[in-house]
Length: 281
Ligand code: SF4
Ligand code: SF4
Image (cartoon, helix red, strand yellow):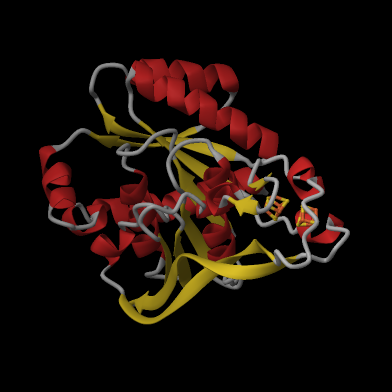
């Protein structure tokens, strides 16, 4: 069972839920936790894993052998991402635009293109109690989160319960993080902005055909019914509400997990797993 935790924007409590879920389920199961929020991985602050391995992650980028290149322009015409520009006497490569598809290398009539590895970040492996912990850290200035997330997800061991902390938003890295999940928990705030972001996330998950449920964080701020009405209309279950609570906020600011400060949530997260199993049956 792979459960991903996502949200339409950052700061909604996605990591609070992912960590709380992993800690609670690890009391009875082997849990694998993947922090795929590679631009800002912060689950480690709460899980405090012991990291015992870090591996550099690279992506292949084209490099041109100028002595073979005839500057015919075919590679630049082929690349829809505009990662290549052929000038009169040189070919420019823009690595930050390259999607590492390898197509330019294949179509070059002069075999003037070969690939070199370019570092995008690091994958770190460790453990926190019964939780097998993996996180991706994108290098500063790097925009290519997707290959790093793909690399981390290759480590998924489905004999465990897998919890994925997805990046916020609805762009490519999110799609990569939640892809192949059995279920996605969408964490939202009860505000008009929260509802707007939730709608966008729902659209993405529907395209991917992933079953979903909603968790309302900071519930009781006054607009809970906005989210509840939308979910009712769209037939999306609201599976949990976490109230707006000073104690929870203080714990979060000190790097303490929700389940440590409010142990009653352990039972709630365990119950949540059973509900998810029922919904995905
Ligand atoms: S397709 Fe090959 S030969 Fe043509 S411009 Fe690109 S690298 Fe040079
Ligand atoms: S590998 Fe693909 S994305 Fe990158 S430059 Fe070549 S054609 Fe463009």
